[in-house]
Length: 118
Image 1 (cartoon, helix red, strand yellow):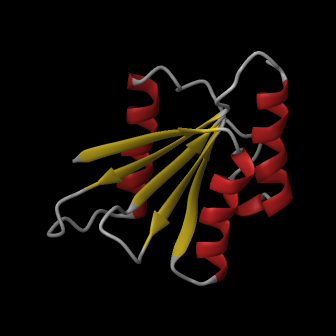
Image 2 (image 1 turned 180 degrees about the vertical axis):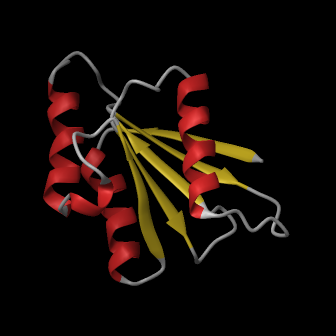
């Protein structure tokens, strides 16, 4: 597994990058970590608002978003449950385990997991 970590100044741009892929049918939001409800019960706006709300709590932060892609060997075909488990463990190991974050599975690239957190 190879992780690519990018920080940014716009939660919205990273969020809509993933959401637009969902609308195109080439990605799926498979997990909402530390959200008040399961991802299946959250609207697009509710998913975004949680990230924006948290980012607004600290106005001193310049780079307010983290976008991580986890890349696996192409021969690995992990289930959604395993990808969610890997994402949760990864976020905990990097110290973001208590932050709200979204996990998207991508079907159009070599990196099947994309995680967004403020």
